[in-house]
Image 1 (cartoon, rainbow, N blue to C red):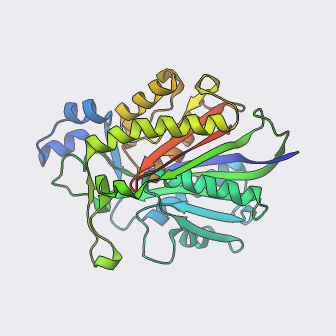
Image 2 (cartoon, one colour):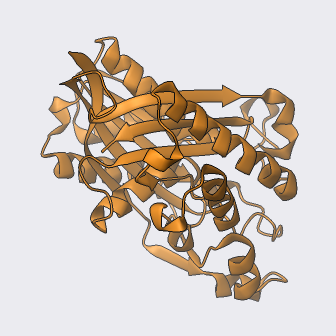
Length: 323
């Protein structure tokens, strides 16, 4: 028998305020058509004043617990993937732990920007396989609206706020690719590319900073590296793109999503796409897409899923799992 980290439930949360592309026409030299044609984004959600990453995480966490039929005390660990925590410390994860009333186990944050949820999922998988935890809540949550430069039309129209959560639990499988749960992971980073996607501020510089991005360079790296990591994860368990039922990609840009699907040899009918409704929510985008895909009835038990993401660092990776 083989131990597997199986998805027990998922949930998501989006702030109440919806911002359509047309709102940016009032302050920037841009248009709804320009934004849609270059990104596929139609709208995004922005957190209300005082609404924080940990608050959104709590909403998503409670939705995931309800979906799984569990209570907070059933969890052994809680991981939050975010680049926009409430405070420098303590971690957003411990704040969520407290808000949920979870008085046992442990909680910590992971920071790998848009790849954060993939990194957190791989860490949760390792905790379960090593026997350190039986149930782990993995949350991706961001308030990117707090670090956007509203005069930069190349970035501020692309990002949104939100949170998504997935609960993994230990189950025994047969050890083959028909098992439910995480089958393979692949993580990568290359710090030489820091300057194409970063925030120009931080604690040690006594500044908050704004998001800066070289869009063409990010696009060039994204399609190649996302297809490569997905192929690598699949190959680890003897699978290829033709075995995949669903790609659930980081929801950054429709052109990146379609380009990666093409490289994997998969039609867009096999890709979960939600970028049009919430923009790039960084670490939150994959759990958001998983939760939305389940709610739509797209994801079915036994489906083979590959999910991949790339973000600042550069950091990128993928996970292959059976739903």
